[in-house]
Image (cartoon, rainbow, N blue to C red; front, top):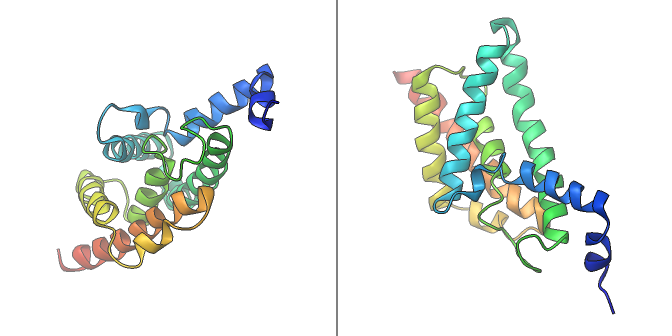
Length: 173
């Protein structure tokens, strides 16, 4: 007897949908790096931030910085849910390393409102990765949330810690 996943996977439209969701969930495939996928995912988020700031006029940067975390979080939860349900990274996988859209969302939260100067992007990268790797309380508890929410929640928390740290640093620099 086929499982619902096996039945759906034979449908070419479903297969394309899962592939597109995988493209999004893995941060445009940056999460498929052979080692340190979270670091590569965050580095890709730095590149996306710089690119979008270059493409949009300065008058739109604040709107962009407010929208990016929300868009990345929504896309991350939805795409992660789809690839998890499709068994793309093994049935029952909780937080596959390749799924890095959560790093994008967390990083975007961390630098929101600070602009895209190289110092902001670089310090944001380092501080965010530290919080994401160390997971100070209660971030580790947030990972226990189900599905895409658990994948996303700890990184959004790391982004909040990053934002607080950067705002304090830039107040005194």
